[in-house]
Amino acid sequence: MTISFSSDSTPHIDEFIDVLQRSTLAERRPVDDRDRIAGMLANADRFATARNSDGLLVGVARAITDFHYCTYLSDLAVDENYQRQGIGRKLIKLVHEACGLNTTLILLAAPKAQTYYPHVGLEAHSSCWMIKPS
Image (cartoon, rainbow, N blue to C red; front, side, top):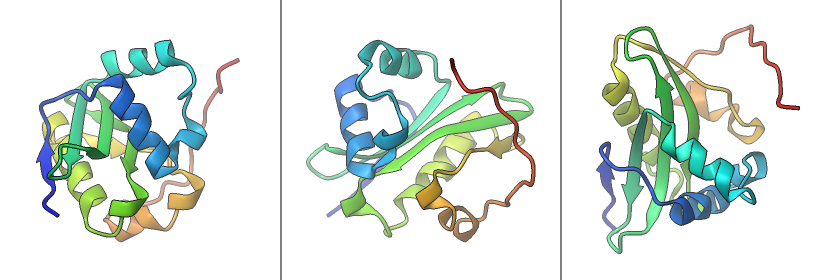
């Protein structure tokens, strides 16, 4: 099946939630809060998407950036049935290019993806600090 990629479209809320669920990323995203998901989509700076030949969204990368120094890759989701085909790697590349290769790409890895990111060229960082929402 052919996969087409784009870095110039925002996914619809329903298909975004659907691919999060099919990728298991929904376990760590507020998919039951449509207003919050809508805000996540509306306020992201760049997306890269992957669709199968039927138009189904099978992968998405969502990023927030200043276009000059840093890019936070806030979501990388690939449908479990489409993993291990290079889709995630291509989505990372496309969204980073759209945000500027002069920026440092930063992400927080999901527990199940800890071994994936070194495989696609990302380096681990020893320090991350955060305040979780209350």
